[in-house]
Amino acid sequence: TLSPTITHTGASINPASGVAQNFTSPVKYTVTAADGTTQVYTVTVILAAPLSSTKDITSFTIDGETVNDPATAFTITLPAGKDVTALSPTIVHEGNSISPASGVAQNFTSPVEYTVTAADGTTQVYTVTVEVPVTSFDPNTGIYTAPRGSIVGVFMTSGGSNSGSASISGGGGSMTTCWGSTCTQNSNSYQFTMPTSGSVLFTGSHTPSGTDLSNSTSGSFQTEGETRFFSMSSGNRIPR
Image 1 (tube, one colour):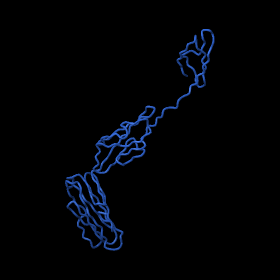
Image 2 (image 1 turned 90 degrees about the vertical axis):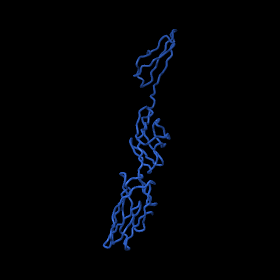
Image 3 (image 1 turned 90 degrees about the horizontal axis):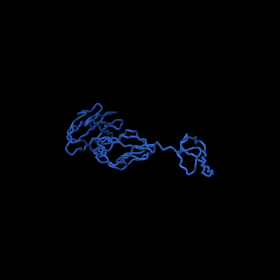
Image 4 (image 1 turned 180 degrees about the horizontal axis):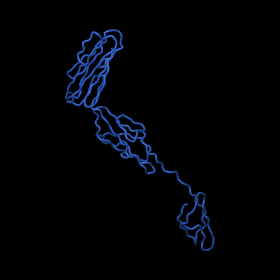
């Protein structure tokens, strides 16, 4: 039921203003003038479509990294060394508005909250965290990066059929591992202090003694709580 407020210039109106009516079907109002003549008004109430409650982020992109249909709390990982103090994400959403707006630079050194507001006024908060690794390793170039002054552990193991050896060097150190009955293994780990440049070139090789290539070498660089893995096999050296 609805109770309309009606202003008219007649002597009376029926039904009266303020009286509740059922508008599931048209309601007729009769205005009677002072001279007794009447005018009938037929009032039909149509309900407008409800306002949308949709308030989803469908795509969030920073520095070429995209997360589609993210959860309300999500993380984007950017390359090591990336400055996150002024990143301008591109955001696609299905709400009425979003704050902060897409394309506006934000400081992501701590998580940033984005609020999407639906057409019906309801909201959804998304918490975005940007992570930047402190280390990286590119086997194609042999370059390992880490914070200067950090203590880096280099670890390597080899194995497989027949016999052979593998070696890696960089950061002022080197080691050789081997497998089979004829090998003399130097060590499978060493440490070095990262220089002020923050990068070190590594060279490595994997050399089986026979034609059977069912063997391989694997290893890792470890520092600052992060591990970067590498692998070598016959004809697959470092740098590549």
